[in-house]
Length: 208
Image 1: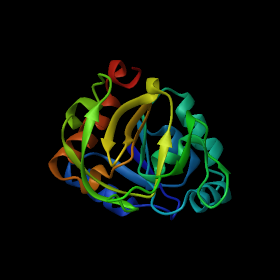
Image 2: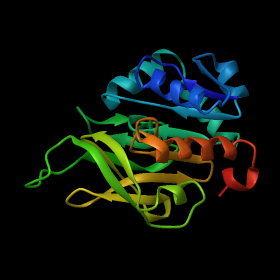
Image 3: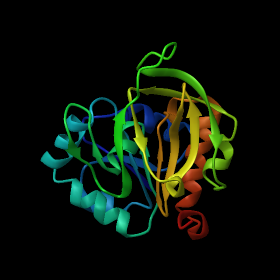
Image 4: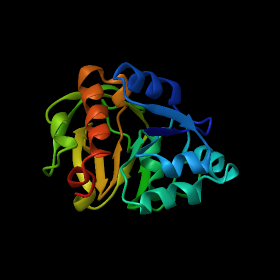
């Protein structure tokens, strides 16, 4: 079963609807026992980094998510959920993140012709081969964000062009993230969620 972290800060219901549509066994939960027993974990997120980390902290979910990540089972962060995987964000002041992937979250710099938030469909360019990211190569997905992740090239699987390259897919071993919303990205996004599900049963895919 795939568990979606329930912390009242995210696009949880739309993610669940997408998994239901794909007939993927899933559950929305904040119960540590349920989370740790999951075959795969999805951390969605919409809104501000500081608010989301506060919600996770209040529910004592930060150590639970870190413990899950240490099991080697696949963990997927979506949009803000991807940003939460990193060390810190500078949105509304500096806030520590989950620290599962090295890197920081910073504001998209202002550029003429590229208003923030970066909102709408944009194309992903693969920066290194990976079975999860491969299906997004040269495919448009749906973005809504004003901050982006700065991380090492080793953890960057894809970028999207918005006046500059913005990190769109990341991975550190079993921990993955998409800056875009796969649940809002049509057939391409649904196929990505299906690939994530396949990672829960194929150790060779989840440990790259």
